Length: 464
Ligand code: AHR
Image 1 (cartoon, protein in one colour):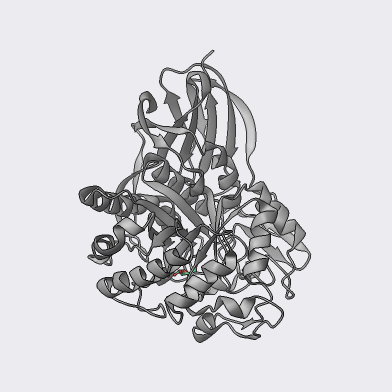
Image 2: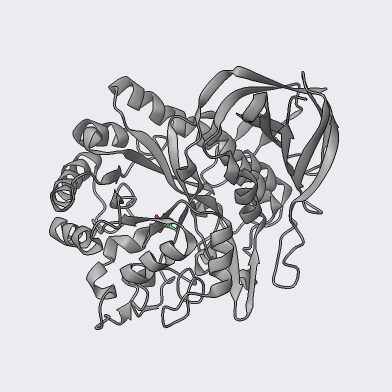
C-alpha cells in the first residue's frame, strides 16, 4: 500500500512565481516560423497560448545564439540581414534577418504579460556593448545573464572558471554603471561535469549576483534520438532525481559560503538529439506524456527546494523542444504545456513536507547524461499549503502500465481532482489530434485515490 503523509507544520519556503518562466532563442523555427512570421510579426494564436500560460520571466535571445549576437543589428530601420552565425556552423542555423529584435521582443513580453530577461554576448561581444544594450532598454529590463554556458567547449567565448569570473565581473560592473540595481545571473555549471566552476564564480562575483544558473537537459543530446522505448521512458521519467542532486550540490556550496544568492534553472527540458533543435513537429520530436512526467517531476524538485530555486525557464517556448508547436495554419500545445498550466497557481504558496511511503520502485538505465538510478519510486508527491488549512497536492504515477492506489493519510471527504495521463506512455498531441492528451477533471472520495498509469494528478484538499 502506498501512503502519502502531509506535514502541514513543516514548511519548505514560498514558491517563487519566477519558476514558471520561459525561454525564446533564435534557432530553428523558434522565432521565425514559430513566434512570428518572417517579417517579425507575432502569430496571434501563439500569443494567445503563451498568454494563457501566465509566463513570468522570458529569457532571450539565447542560449548559444546570444554568444554571437550583436543587439544593435536587430534595432532601428537598418536591420543587418545576415547569417545566424552560431547555429549555422553546426548545421542548425538559418538566415537571420534581425526583423525580430529587442523592441519586438519587449513588445511580445508586454502582449503576453511576461517580464523580459536578456542574456548578454560574452562570446564576440564586449562589456561596453552590453552596457549600451542596458541603456538602450532604458529601465525596461531588470534581469540580465552574464553570458551563456561559458563552461562548455561548444560555446563561443568558452573560458575556464577563474577567467570567466574575472571577465563576468567586468561585464557586471559596466552594466551596473549604466543602470544600478540590475538583477544579474552568473553562469553556473553542473558539478557532476565541471567540478570547481561554481566555487570560482561565487568566490569572485557571488555578492554581485542575484542568481547562479544551472542548465539541465534529460537525457541530453549524447543519447541520440530517443525512440519510444521502455528504457528511454524509464530514464526520462526518473531524470529529475539527478537534477535534485545537482541542485543540492549547489545549495550546499552557497550555504557554506553564506551568500544571499539563489539558483536559476534557466534552461531545462527533454532533449535527446540535435535534429530536435530544428523545431519541426513533423520530424517526430513533439513531446509525449513521458516528457510531461519529467516536467512535473522537475517542478517537484523545485517545490521541495522552494526557498533556493527561485527561477526556472523551460527550454523552449515555441517549436524548438517547444511547449507550443506550429506549422502554417496549425498550432497545438504539448502535454508539457498542460503541466505548466496545472502547476501555475502553486506560485506564491508555501511548500509543505510530503512523505510517500511504500511506493513500488524501479531501476532507470544509464542514458546520455543520465546515470543509472536505483530505487526510483513510481509514485511521488509534493504539497502546497492553501487557505483555511487546505493543501494542493500534486502526485505522479510514472508506472508505464499500472494504476497505483494511494492513501492520503488524515484526509477524507470529496476532493476535486485534475489528471493528465493520455492513453499510453508515449501519447502525444499533434496537428491532427491537438487534444489527444489533456487534463481531465473529476471528484474522488478520500482517503483512497487511484492514480492511473503515466499520470500527473492535482488534488485540492480542503478541511470541511
Ligand atoms: O536550448 C538549446 C541550447 O541548449 C542552448 O542554446 C544552449 O544554451 C544549450 O546548450
